[in-house]
Picture (cartoon, rainbow, N blue to C red):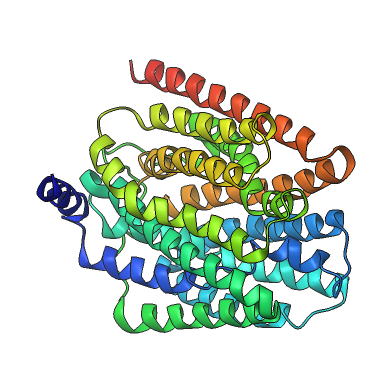
Length: 405
């Protein structure tokens, strides 16, 4: 039994390029400092800062607005300059801006710095997604994205646990650590991962010799983006209003909130690659996405239906993590399947914009609903939006099937 399990894990991780592994190492170092964003609402509403839930939610929304601009800018620059250069610039700018944001006390300046940080930080994402596609083969592309997500979530697990400890000592330490890990990732990328040879921008034919379709004219992809915005708006509650719910309703201390985030990262690290290895190519990407979104929606339903106890947040995090494992790797595979080398940054940028738009809508709207109507109402609304998104993905799957006939 142990030998079979070991062989399965070995198969799941085999066949990936050296550059893919190096890119994931860079991501691991970068995300090991991910601790500012999940603790931002608690940081801003603590007595020493004195801001309301709505004001904290607005700052999270501003992060999302900056991320929209960063996603658009990063996608355009990736197709023009190449993913390697854009990643270097984004990591340098993000490292500096995290440290600056930690020094701000005035609410207007917090908002300005949050916006600028998010612009440079999220310009990294389209470039990084394009890099993964370039360094991988079609037959292992979903696993390459899963390996990258594994690095992200291992970093998230470490960062969440360490962030909870640091927050209990001094919240300002979070900003310094986050900034320094960005700069450390920059050095790793610059030294060990050299630019790949990519297709010039003027190349305008797809893999099958067809004219390249703009991401902004691909109707199926645009509907996919709409569904993704709905789903991501719900998913972002896990890292914005949900920690506040744990703190104010369940009265969990910061270190336990950090452990919950660690649980999310560890579950993904242990199970995602193997599950993707077993599922990849068996069904359409949208099939897995549909059931993943349903799992996330159920996790919010149970927050209202089950008794409040210490077990509740761990159970709901387990269910939400399962939904994340089913949905997100195959979302990446779906959008990359519609690209060619010359427009990949454009598709990656629009996908980043979808998540960034959700980062504007989700945390700010969630905080507003929580303050005015309470958390119970918020969880019912969020679970309902998840149902709408899931049905949208299912309908998109049927539309895509008809388009191929």
